[in-house]
Length: 197
Image 1 (cartoon, rainbow, N blue to C red):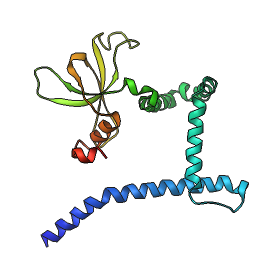
Image 2 (cartoon, one colour; image 1 turned 180 degrees about the vertical axis):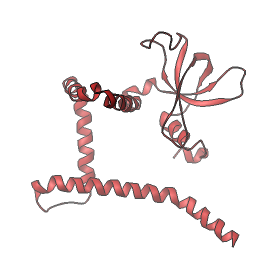
Image 3 (tube, rainbow, N blue to C red; image 1 turned 60 degrees about the horizontal axis):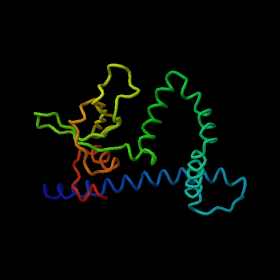
Image 4 (tube, rainbow, N blue to C red; image 1 turned 30 degrees about the vertical axis):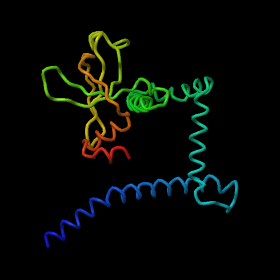
């Protein structure tokens, strides 16, 4: 009986990530399809092709990306952002989310760096992301000239700590930011072959 329960839980653990991923994708696709249907039906009537919602969603996102790459659209976007950047509580939430999204933007890729943080004389090592290479623009006393800001993500939750450490404490490693964040999220439990997928 014990062996049967082991087989059951092993099978459940192997199929659960796939099942949850498919289910979340199904919910997202269903939602975007119904939204597209509501928007398009008044224009094209009852004619509707399955998958049109996804195509429209991709086109809208690409269109926004194209528009925001032009200076005039950037100025208009800053006007749209004005209420979000000035209201007290909303400002904190919006600024945090925007800075996090900007960190992963393609034009920022060169400034991103995955590092191993090790204090000299200690065996402990922590994987982090360098988010700032200098103290330029920071309040006086927050960081010294030879320090870098390193974000240390926490496993199994959204959050982490930012520490200012001497540049000599960090060693760059050959890993993408996305891979480091994904591995940190699951507490580095995946094998090398799984983390490369």
